[in-house]
Image (cartoon, rainbow, N blue to C red; front, side, top):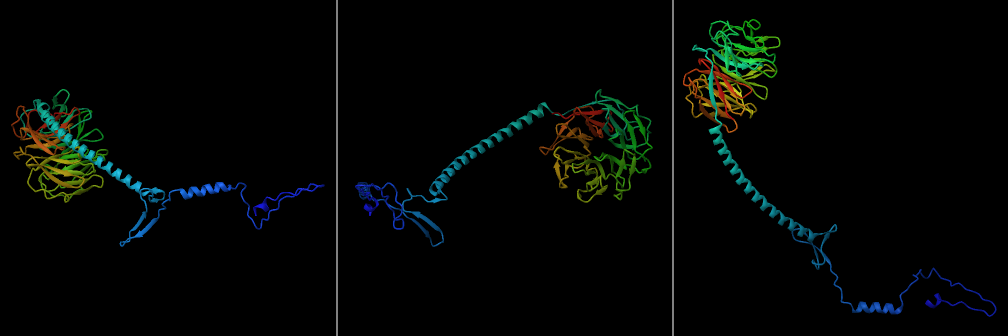
Amino acid sequence: MLSDMRRTPTTSATTTTTTTPTTTTAAFPSLPRFLPTLPTILFLLLLVLLAEPMSWGEVVFVEDDEGALHINTSDPASQPVLVNGMNVDALFETVAAQQSMLQVYQQNVQAQQSTIAMQQDTISLNQARIDALRAEVCHASASTFGDLGASSDKWRGGVLASNGLIYATPYNAPSVLIIDPVTNTVDTTSISGLGSDMYKWAGAVLAHTGLIYMFPAARPSVLIVDPSSNTTDVTSIDFLGMRDFKWLTGVAAHNGFIVGIPSSATAVLIIDPTTNAADNTTLSGLASDSNKWYGGVQAPNGLIYGIPDTSSSVLIIDPVSLTADTTTLAGLGSAPFKWFGGVLAGNGLLYAIPSRATSVLVVDPASNVTTLLAVADHAGVDDWVGGVLAPNGNIIGIPHNSASILVIDPVANTTSTKPIEVSGAAEPRKWRDGVVIGNGLIYGIPRDAETVLVIDPGC
């Protein structure tokens, strides 16, 4: 057959004719131009015969009795199982390496946690030392100034005006007491001639108009003081009744209204200082008992909480919807003079100052839950009346019968008392309510005391 494919052309004596080889395509396929020679083929066959026989592996798929699928190869060391091109054995080795690394990391974390715990213990120890040093070198102190006479129940409550002066409300005194905290001087003549009758007004708030509103205790009208001119107005808000101790305290609400907290009054007093309109009917129908609530605090939720004096419940007032609630925070006992005044602390809780109660009343306005914070050094007889928030975050209770100030630490949730080393500290009914000014000093309003009390709450 190969000889046919290589046929030699025929030559004539007279004529040269070239004959082209003819390929029969129907019988033979097209072959490559190069074909190995016979010696080459024999050499390759010899190599195959002499070579070491190759071991061809096989893959086995087996399902066990529990239905699990097993994939095995004949030689796992050289014939790995691949899943989507990934070497399963290599993946296992990677996972094992990562587990080993995780164990090292966990050991490092445990060591770091141990170090952090030791550092926290050190911080706590250092903080205790700092607190001890602060108690020694940065403690609260007190002083007094003025000569205001020996009469009783002179003023009750006061407020800091925009001119930097403190205006104290005349209760039995015939004049407004003006305290200058810059010069530590007092003035009882600029606003005088208000009458010698008893229980005239009590408590004071500063309205957004710049005017001061003092609440009617026995008088039928509100006393309005203009600190820019030291003038008074007793006619704009009148005819509120002649009963004694109607409203002794109040709050300037965030919406601009002034809210009078009822003591013996049967209604909350609502004043709009923009128009001097007064309303004592919308929030009426309260009990006719005397000394129901003393002092009020507006919480971050916008509600005003009246502090229970004799009442067994906290009075909750909504100054926007003009509604009142005496049932949510109830069951606090009906003993008289429990707490006098309250303060909103930086933690959002309200702290009521104990007068005859042996504990501070703590109100959480977010949950409407009350708790009690015991005061160890407390005789329980009108020790403190009113309180203020000091710049250091502590709450200072104003000494009334006590010879010490009350210090409430809302962060540590503790109380303590600090003796005041001033003349007349052991006398009863000394100061009632207080005012804090921009420099952090607190001024106690004289009730029976002949002087103004100045408290430096310390750092």
